[in-house]
Amino acid sequence: MIIDCIADLHGYYPKLDGGDLLIVAGDLTARDSAIQLYDFMDWIMNDCCYKKRIVIGGNHDNILQSNERFMIHDVKNEQRIEYLCDSGTEFEYEVEVPHPASTEHVIIDVLCYERRKLKIWGSPWTKTFPGMNPKCKAFTVDTEEGLAEKWALIPDDVDILVTHCPPFGVMDDVYNNTTGEFDNTGSGSLSIAIMNRPSIKLAIFGHIHESYGKKDAGKEGHRIFVNASHVNERYEPVNKPIRVIL
Image (cartoon, rainbow, N blue to C red; front, side):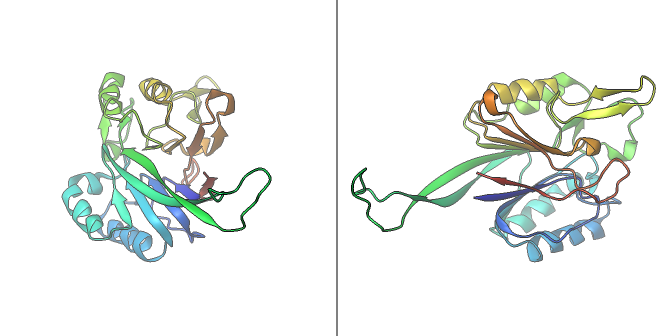
């Protein structure tokens, strides 16, 4: 199954290859306007060829937060798109499996398919920080305790977790001009929430543009982490969507 992940679009809407599932992890527009939200909706509904598309908000999406009821209404009329805000959805897909009558010595050359289901949860929240642009505080809280309350809503049996915020210590590095070192800026309580939910196979986020990439946790449970930021720290759209095969 093909999953394409992207975040931090900031008004850039690239041509995508298409697949089974598209996940957009927040910061949809450049100037937080209704017109650009319509541009985003036009792009995801008409230019993205996927069986299902998942969208969450980010801290730049004030227009989305204030028009959440409108967004949900529009999305619910398009069955292949779902907007998640501390909520979940499911994605059914088919996988090829051996024929039930096949054995080690007898191979029956007939294709069989088994329907499986992925449970997906989306949450847009991040924490404020000193000097944060007041126009970029959508879906934010002021404390780690506030974030922990949001993560507590995540069900225990989720397969794919979509957040705008990264977990602490996982592709969350920001260069500190004062110290000349990189600081971890992710959420510690999100790290704990993920660790306590072994069902999570894939965690997708963005927010920290300079830490784009994919990490396979491997020994930690074959879990994949994706920072899918489309723009870099200079807001240039240089990063490709990250493809994950599950």
